[in-house]
Amino acid sequence: MNQRQLYWLMFLLMALVLILDKPAKVVPVPMPDPMEDRTELPSNSKKASGNKSTYPVGLALSGGGVKAFAHVGVLKALEEQGVRPNIISGVSAGAIVGALYSDGYSPDSIVALFDSIRVMDYFQWELPNGGLLSMNGFRRFLDEKLTAETFEELSIPLRVVATNLDQGSSVVFSSGNLVDALIASSSVPVLFNPYLIDGVNYVDGGVLQNLPASALRSSCKTLIGVSLGPISADPYQKSILDIALRSYKFIFRNNAVRAKAMCDILIEPARISAYNGADIMHFDEIYQIGYEEALLMLEENQLFQALK
Image (tube, one colour):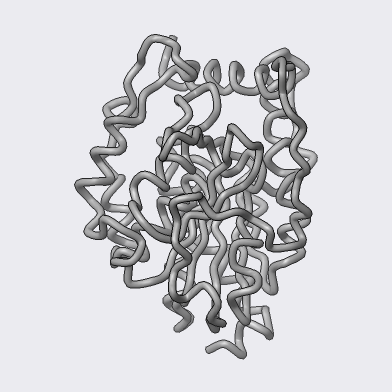
């Protein structure tokens, strides 16, 4: 089994659990309306001093695995157009890109940072205990590369969305330990163990909110959203694997539909649908797609032109 097949197998397992699993003794939790900013803060989090301020430009970055390199291309396009976000929110891989950028990395340096990475050097197999892989190696990578240890040390305010697995709710981290929040937001169910913070289990923020627009909507004047899950009628084969993966993608895409409506400017590269979240060998192509489609979108958007 090669690495690509291994990834497909892991995503299949995740999809099947999400679709078919019916756990016992689940207490129903009312789900928040995604058009309203009711996302919870973790119990140990203090609201960042800027949370009630109005920022000129906010940027919401969706999850998407390796497809998050498109976010880096979008950031490059924004810089070339003379716009730098004043606050950023992110989910999963989008949160990692947002953290690196907020920490002072340029788009080019983010690409260079991951250019020589072999994914399995940072994720190790472990005995099943809520997940198939450990993120300890990736956590060490983030600890090493990020200058900031806490949200408060970032040059651009950042909000990271994770899913509280115990209560079934979205949670926004905006203060405290930065890497803890990033790992929590990136812990894809089944693939990785839930991440424990102060006695609470967290998993991938994209489970409930793959485009974290509500985390910023009330705090910024103009909100730019970047969604890496365009809903398209792309061809597929009627195999168990393809049907399961297609169903899994719809889960994440559907929960972003109303979040897109919150954005003043939405960037959703259509060509990104040709790639999956494990296409690490194509990260440079994905980056270029984000860059090119963002430039095209921004140059034609009158609201964006007014920001410059």
